[in-house]
Image 1 (tube, rainbow, N blue to C red):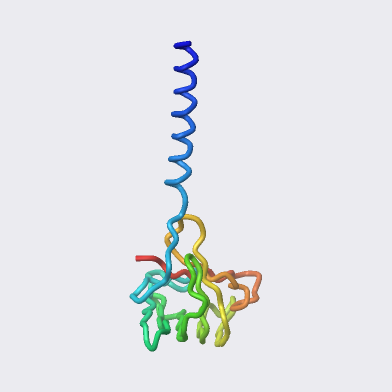
Image 2 (cartoon, helix red, strand yellow):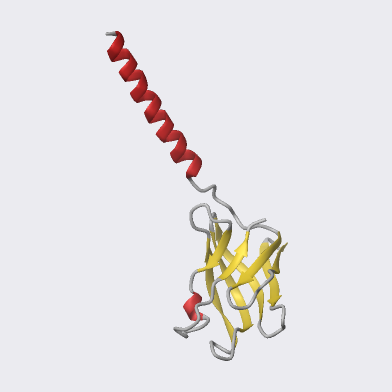
Length: 147
């Protein structure tokens, strides 16, 4: 009887340990809000630029830019945020970018893009990156980092 109680206690402790690990490794949802956030772009930003999100008339507006250290590449974003839910938001506005002459060159697009945070990552990543640059050579990773 004592051996059965020890085994049962061990199984319960093991199950509680697994539950604890599961709960502590789950992502904490993050809702984008007012503030200034670092922004990085693969192939452009050696150091991060910044986006600023402000609230005006119950809407969130986003504006930001980043430029490469040698001034050969840049990105500018300006617009507003729609469908702001935990770990995802839609940016509606304009993205102006110069990536590389051999890559996409000059890009000036207006549209709607989704930024999504996956798992425990510390950034929101542009989901439809192929809509900015259709080149197979360069793949634009546009990230807005959490504070």
